[in-house]
Image (cartoon, rainbow, N blue to C red; front, top):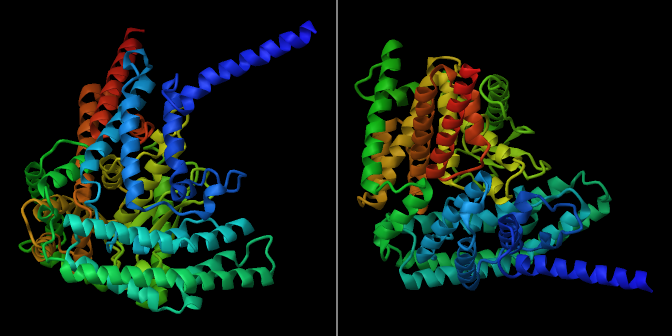
Length: 611
């Protein structure tokens, strides 16, 4: 009897202890800040099933309830998310940083910067263009289904069908948001709506049975274990039926909504045209660069970098007998030489993919002396889905799933093999794959001993700054085969410097789309088609293009500071490790981390000398 009583009292004590711990952890302010970090991420992720799929952390587990859902794109949900953000900042600020470890304090600072930045951005909650030619919902949803939704087991195939059935709701929510923005006078430039409408009509006119959503599905389940041939055929019919019943009508409604907006849109391109447009652009710059640099300062910085890089390019050209008076004309002439081009058609496409893979494999061998920490798995090269090629950038990287079930993918736009020049391929591969985004993003995902949000949180200036810095590392360390590859590397960096000028030109100095295209062509020697795609990108994503150069220059500045202060004791491998093993950071916090590392290295060197 006494024993049962003791057990009962013990069980009651455990229950009370659990309640004392769990109640604040789940509903109020968790006792430990690490529990708060976990709760914030879990709460956010559970409301974003597409994020959970992209991370891949629950794929194939019993906790797979989200896999047939799409995100909520409604106006109501966006406003609810803004209120959630306000609440999280209030909770975060209740914790005392003076009681935290150094690692905890950094996590606090990272989350505080991110949430506060998002909160400032909520003043402009509906200032974006949810339908646009670069990453709009009209292409993002099909792209997600074809490239991110897993198809490794029969249940995945069922969830694919369920998600297609939700396209109608998703696009109706997008249309609701477009109508709200119209009332706010937030309407994309007319050319954006014209291009998006053409893309959607092209997608829509393909018969359901031949739609990319169906063809890709059929190819991906062709060898799926656990499915008979008859079951695969039935699933393909269900996907085609859902495209016919739900997806096509949803596109019809979105096409009609964009046709209406096109009729009322203006030809003005910069966000200066929006209500409080200058303040919105200031926020875009701050959020993307993670600095307080004003637009005019960034513009002048860009002009200075343009002049420096053009001088370096002219020096190489002069050494090889090319005229340098008109850099753009010379680069166009050089790029037109047959030795730098691929044959047309699928034979050229096949060779481009193979050559990119060879460049990446070679880079992976050459980085060994430069990096202590390396990704746990490789990167694959794939073609941009055909339905996206017309408006997609030349190349981009898609991170691997957290567990590595889906590898990192370097996507290459092969709409026309003639657009791919051998001059620029090495640098593109170094930026997007190794040692660029694949290294940075994959290493971040694999970090141990820090809150999960630190492994996935995005800071554009850090991420893209690292990609551009990786190009410089390759150039400095002899990755390029000859002077022409080096020239391609400098042209790529010049292209990023020009972005500082063009982005601020469009959104602060009121340049037109045509002015921006003309300046970029005259300055870089890039082709009109490529330049047009880029300029149109800056128009729908203000401030983002400035992050690359600003981030790269900060990393280079910190590296030089470390070299100056540590002298012969500077170790490039250790510098790279400290930059990469803290996850993405705002540039102010990256500077703090590097300064602390420099101080620690100095103390270590002094101790060794004293010993």
